[in-house]
Image (cartoon, rainbow, N blue to C red; front, top):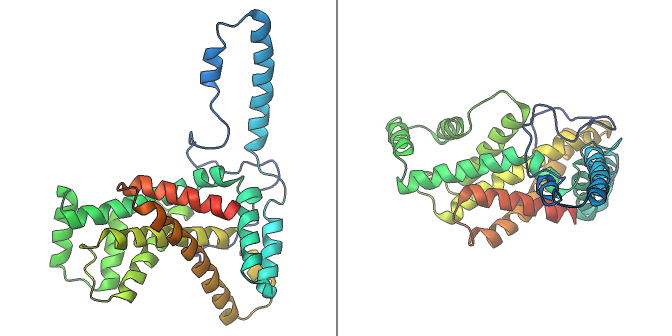
Length: 283
């Protein structure tokens, strides 16, 4: 369910997001610039009060941007309960704690994982353009690849490489693996499928599995110590991971089916689906 070693998580007071992640306006903590502008014509006393309130709000926002200590501890406890036979209820509790406390709530979690939505959306857009031949660059690439008569595995590798270039980051590696897994599942269901002539439903399913697989990779990264500390056989661990993956995929697919008919823009759709998925896990 993941390719990287599990993380012990940041120390208390450290930022939720790593330093290298580009700041995003969608993160928790509202932009106060509009409020500041609207207060500019207020009286002196009101301005002083607003300044004090703004200072307190900014301090609260700064605290909210930092993670509490042992933020994944409760999630790992629930994951241990799941592995001990607690069933899907314990798994749901683990996901809920991971999103709410470990990642700072669904909104911040969606901001942290915005690369997931961006990558899934780009993949969906590329597949739609390949089918419709609506983008000259994509069309030229497809025609060139078709001439190579590649195997399914090689075609997946080339497609992922084209849509999601390797930047060397752990998150991008996880996303590329998630996309490859989604395309691989498509071929497993229909080995003779033409990947450059997919229906909207098939494209949406590839996007859903990509998002779900990357969410699973995130769970593996943050909660994977649970597997390492408990003495289960590799076979048992893989069975548990398969169950986790099936649970996450089923949730994402339900959301994709509900929202996919209302949006024809793959990039926007991917953002909406990831956000809704994290909100479901957090509830």
